[in-house]
Image 1 (cartoon, rainbow, N blue to C red):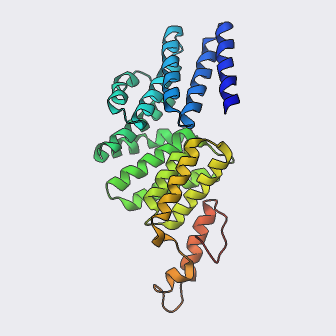
Image 2: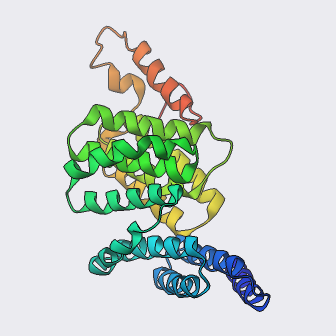
Image 3: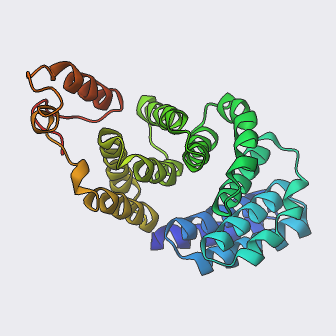
Length: 277
């Protein structure tokens, strides 16, 4: 990553020398995101503040809004909640469709943390078609993740499972991976570890792949937390025959096991029919 940092800093220098504010703004933004992915939050915040000041000066408005979005997110993650909330009024000024979708999702994340699930759920459901329309990781997968959180907070377990199923289907059916899936997959793992271990195992599998591909501290931390969620719930680790023989004393459990295995395979998890753990 050190090489990536130096390349982006050089890109900023060259873009400024050539009088290309849009290119410099993009490099600032990518540098800040890299810091955030590596959990270097102070550097990420400082870079986004530089981007905000630069974009205001040179009127690269899209990056002004993106800088505010990242600053609110970073400050909320690092416990500076009053600072994060102070950005909220400024973030309502943009009419860019992608930015509006991401902003609504960030507001939902914060309001869910504040225990406002009733107020959030309707907004997330109303904005879901817009989030799905782009058919992109950055809009669809995080939206399903926050929607699952809202359903879980309100005790709507069936809808929560449906949202997580949609999240996993999206991740599984794409020919590439995206690091924006990391936190939604962690959310899905935590919400389902006690109820649907095969779902939680599928989330861990995909988090392992993301950690192998992106090598960021964010990916490593999410994977460790997901594995920890399963470890703390050892009772959810299961071998098909041991788990189902007590439920089906006559041994007629094969259809249930086959169904669960089929779901794992559908979510892109390679598994052997005689053991899942």
